[in-house]
Image 1 (tube, helix red, strand yellow):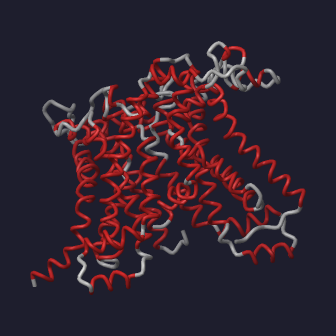
Image 2 (tube, one colour):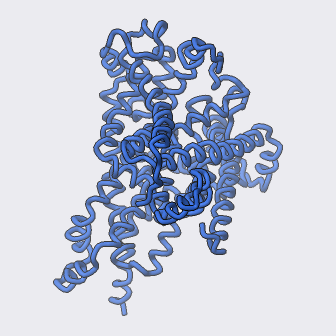
Image 3 (cartoon, one colour):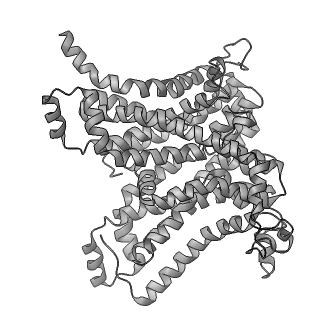
Length: 291
Length: 280
């Protein structure tokens, strides 16, 4: 009996080391965070339980509401612009044989560069004196005279643009993998019917890659909420909170203000959002929604 | 493989759009490279183009001013340390999930646990983790960050390795078991030699992730002397705010090792980075 028990334990021995590390680094702090969001702890003093006060405060916090709004804009931006460009790129790529791997290599390249490197590239290109602005003015195109990163109206989109610039090639690769699995006879049939390129895309390609497409929507919705690097490096959330997002605001509250409880409450809100998104997708999948 | 047949005119059109898209990626990177080999005085007259005079000393200057010998070492310690902890331990876990108990409830429980772990935003746990690490004296040390990186990358590595190991012929393991090999022996003498490609792929992806990582590096390491590449480059770019040639050279130095690896192992990088989520 004991021997049988030990035998069944063997798989666990192999799992325990990494699971313990993962548990210490991710599970325990996450649980702690979910507990700390009901306190007013500042990191070293006494811990007072204050119930839902942090959350009441959040809902009256102008910056927090602004950050939520910006994360929403960010998500919508990523769900439209990079996805459209990537779908176009992938669809065109299936039509070329020559240089295909080369294109793929190029498109994917920024994805392996560090966020700081990509940010430095674009910080320079947005520079009012050296960058693209004065260059384009030589041709009579007035795109921007100040760096879009420093203007209240454009800062969020400028940051989003840089992040999307490095990200869309990733989408191309996952879309094209799916597109190559589409049955060729479908296109041949459409060809006989005299379908246009757009019709082929709309009625064959797109429906056939829907699982991958939905997957990309899911990861964008999940990844858009903790978006941090590009905002922190390029604008730090400014000017005047015009590009503030949740992750950056949380970092500010946590490591500048040492507002442990308050920051935990922001983290909890982000977690709840991700949890809801995943649950919805899980339910849809259960309902055989073919995603 | 399915392709759509295109007329020649369409093909040219396709290539034109694809070239435009490629240029939108190549040109910005080219500008960074040009600036890295440009004399500083030329920036004013020729901010975007190819330098009229090539000055490789920028690299030397950046190397010295940024103390890059040290920084390279710091980043390398973090990458190698993480690989040393994360890859063998993830391999053991993947072996357990794929071979020892391929259909057991263990697999379901652990798989679900890692999946939940993957989708928790880092911001939820970074602050309590910071406080925990402070009490454990792991803040501001390689070891502390290596443990964190191992945990962050483990779910990905485990899933990738499991999906590979599950395709290994089970008869090999059965035969070895009859010969009296224990589970650890099965792992070291059968599973590892047969699945080295996936070890290589996960090693590359985890190495890349650690080399480029920013959020945890900037939060957990605050001594300049042990900061890795990403955060040094960040403070460097603030310190020499207007010295773009210097900053560009530093940025190229950071990007180069990974760019070379990417050129050498393009297929592995792409399949590894895209399959992480897709296979589940």
